[in-house]
Length: 308
Image 1 (cartoon, rainbow, N blue to C red):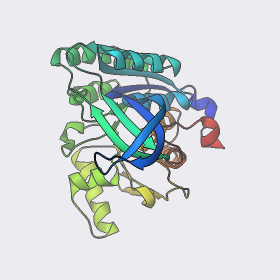
Image 2: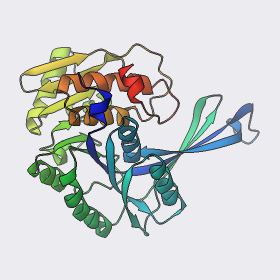
Image 3: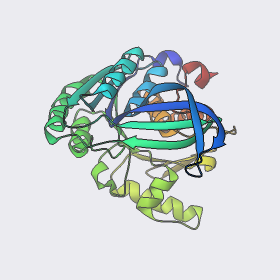
Image 4: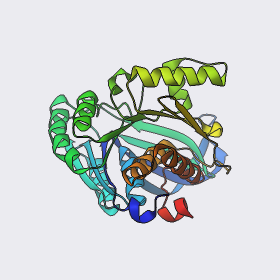
């Protein structure tokens, strides 16, 4: 069993789509006369790290050393991200692209429930992404595990080359996938799709046996060491060559699933870097995910919570 002290020695490189999560909290006491929607009187607001930045935040919260490589716009939201990352002790390498706006997810919360989410996003330029790839070559040598956090915002256009180079340096590569084209993730060490994302790629199933067969077929097709599918209330299933391991979901009240996948892949990466085997890493990630869904918004798990 690994310890918190071993987590603190882990070195993780996170690469992917960063975003700024903004929360507007307010009271709801009436319906608008203009349309059948609630009127929210905003009383306070918060800003949090989102996307790959939230993965990095979770890595740092577990006590590990974290570097983050991504792209932001030359705007106020990008500056806000820089400030938040510094506060979390994350070594951020953010390439600025003046032609895009930093991705923002604005959530309006009333009576402790999310009422609305508004997204602002544009894709980064090829020139900035090429420069990011050059820096990736330098950073990957000094890490234990690479996490590629794909939110489909265009920041991982060169993900195939990143996987290839990291594997050439002998680094494990964990990918949180997006979309229905998983061929771009071929050669990675481990993928962490959730149940809905896996269904989008593999199709539906009618039995556990069919589910297992589809998962193993995908793992073989992409030449992965492992495939971890998170299944909400059904727990997690880990597939390796000739092996299937399952862990039940943590029995607790689900308050907010925002960012739970970020917490899971962060806990996996840190655990593996600290010396855990796949099954132990899955169990710790499952516990971390169970803790974080009991918190509001994108949140983190501490070593005290994980080993308590």
